[in-house]
Structures are given as C-alpha cells and as structure tokens.
Length: 350
Image (cartoon, one colour):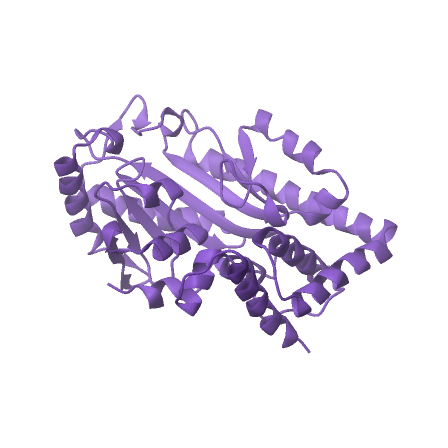
C-alpha cells in the first residue's frame, strides 16, 4: 500500500510552540508485554505472527481524537517510509530493521504511535508539541487502559509491569522532553548543566536518542529509573528539572544579549543569509544553521519564518526529502534538494 499521504504530513508534535520555545516537544512511552508469552527477542517466527495478529485486531478498533488508528504491517512499508517514520520519532531504528512480524498503529495526526513486537510486545508512544507532560501522560493512560481491557498484560504485584529490558521494569514509563539550548552551548555552560542530571536519575541525549549527537543544540532529557518510582513522581520530577533548564537557557540568552550583542547578531544573520542563498547543505550544517536562525527569532533579532523550527529540521532530512520528491537521493543530490527546499522557504520571508 502507498502510505505517502499519511507519512508526508507534519506530525502533531512538530508544531511550533510560542509559550516556551525552548521546550520543543514532549514524549510519553509505555512498555507493555503479553502475559505468558516470551519477549519478542525469544519469539519463534510463527509465535511472533500470532502475537502481532492478536494485538493488531485490538489496535484496529482503537480511537484517537475520535478517529480510528491506522494499522500498518511493517512489511508493507518501503525503506523510505521507514526512514521517514524514524525521522519523525514514530518508530525506532531497531524496529525498522527487523524481519520479524511487526506492525505500527498510527494516529492520523501522528500524536499516537504503537509499535508491535519491538523490544516489547507493545511500545505505546504519545508525542506532543511543547511542554505538555500531563496531557501526554493522560492520553497514554487512556490507550493503556484500552489495551489492558482487551489484552492480558504481564504484571506482577511485587515488580510492576514486566519488560524485556530490566531498566523498564516497574512502571514501564519513559518520559522525555526535547529542548533547544543554543545559548547554554554558546556560553560554555552546557556540560556543567547536563552533568548534574546523572545524580537526579535523568539522562541527556541527542535528537535521535542513545548514541546520537546533539546536532542543532537539541537535547532530549529523559528519566532513567522506572522501578520503585510512581508515574506521578517521574512526571513531577522531570517537570521541575525542565522548568529550571528553560530558565537557565533564558538567562544564558540574556548574557549573550548584554555581553556579546554584535557577535550574536552577526552569527544569526549569517545563518539566515546562508539559508536564503546556499545551493548545497549537509544535514549537520543545516541543523546548526537552523539552530542559530531559531535563536535569532526567539531573541527578536530576525524576522519570523512561517515554517516551524522542528518542521524545518525534520523535513530537511534525507527520508523526508526523498518522500517529498518521490525519487532516490544520495550524495550531493540530497544536499542540493535540502538547500533548494530551505532556500525557497526562506526567500519568501518579508
């Protein structure tokens, strides 16, 4: 099947948020497994198919925002489709690479995605723009309740939810916020700030999780502990840390405004000029330029761009570019199409 229309639209979480522009998005993820069934890594081919079929029949009847989710067997997706889903944080790279019976339930607006037979039988994800931990957790809870009412979920009173990875046992909850912290990087405070997260039971990663670099000065902050800690404690703890982090970033921006105004203006205007005129752009360079440009907009130095920061970032990646122009891209052709897309968008600015 052709899922081009569904996958090419901007995901709900990619919307720009004016209230706290530093907090780009919120993600809630719940890991769940079926009782009395081996975890996905230990499943035989026929058992994986039975589990996928069982869960798929339940997910096909699930509503999100009064619309039925779309269930997609993984084997119906092209390599480009999978790449786009990874770029939009709707599936994991490991999920895309497996030949095992797997599937994805996806809301029309991409607010909810549920992976079947990933590391666990069920990976429920809710993604929201901005700082919406409570709202995202509430929706994830409704989906979890629906699945538990229709499936026998693995749970032990002593331990909580049983998961493939021991670090997820307990609540099975991973909470993360995506933050844009350019001023903390430019004022050389970022390592000190992020270094304090370990003792707090938190970890900072790049845009695409474990092992990824913080291109574009984007950092994902998430919890590390799930056992012996309630969902409410996890949420309130991350909420408090996120608020402090946003405050530190705002203070760092004020330092740039007061102590290096010309350097800051020159930096962001140079970024704007390159985005408006470049003919070739690598993904790493694009992330850096868009980060500087967004900083200039947030500090009221540059005129606003109609397209949002996260939308520009994601849509400039290889999979999204290939889906958009409907042909393979590699080497300089990717860099050309990326520059072409951004140049057109930026030249429309008045």
